[in-house]
Image 1 (cartoon, rainbow, N blue to C red):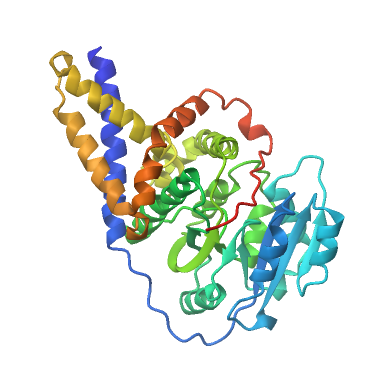
Image 2 (spheres, one colour; image 1 turned 135 degrees about the horizontal axis):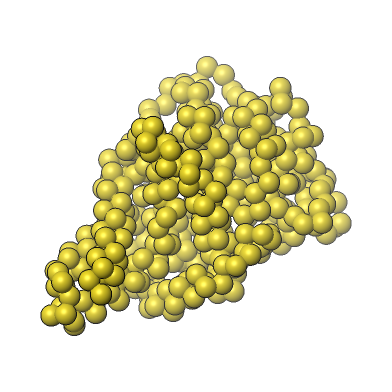
Length: 391
């Protein structure tokens, strides 16, 4: 019993220290100052769309509304299993439409097919968006100023929720904001590589083409792409001022499918890169070790938060039977709560948050049960449909 208590306590010490360190580091994040760019870079905005007829037309139209030289960016819709009427309408817009079809679809396959048809020498950078993403009008303008001034190979923009129409969507937006603060702001402020979201991210075009051509990822391609870049010493910079709006999950079934895919891919790449991650640690490459091991070895944050809450309550009730009593658990719970609270932007603190928090216990239970349903989840593509109406 003593050994089990020690192992569980040490795990949560690690989780809380990790979260708190990067949460506080994120407070000191400052975007790099921008200088007037000497030239306009050429961007290719890639939007893979698998059965996204409900949202892709609106997304394509809004992608054209950039405060940036229109002859210096192309919008490319990668149409996988779209309706003929949707494709016909898209083809009337001043964009490129690349139709693809696979026996088993994945985002990597779609991107590779499109990149194979696009000339490398035509573009400087590629932007990857999800089929529901809307860029702020100055997204490309800001990215151009940053990239022209500093020459980054990979930059993650800030993803913000574009809808809060249900409690689940609201909490999904809060979760994204915490991820932005801890795993992007905090990591960048600490001199490490920002995590990649999978959309709202910009890559050197030739580099992306090269890396993706060697990848066969089914789920979580962004995790593997980040690790592939870090193996070459290429860090991802987080640029908070370049904003993309992302549709948040509104329905429980879609939420569970999405999280199942995310959790499965997390542990798949933990296993795949565990050896190289440990070798990186002994070679002094803490950045790769962090992204390959430290971040992926943790349980999902909501599960950690729920378990820590339950264990703290149990420790208070049964403190006489514990080797170290309840004090360590109360301290861990308090520090973790403060870290989470400072990671949530002020815009989320409202009556809506108080109402949404009532749903957290149920979401925690569903997330926890997903841990026992991960078998083969990373061997097939799990699609998350979009089409919620934003408020």
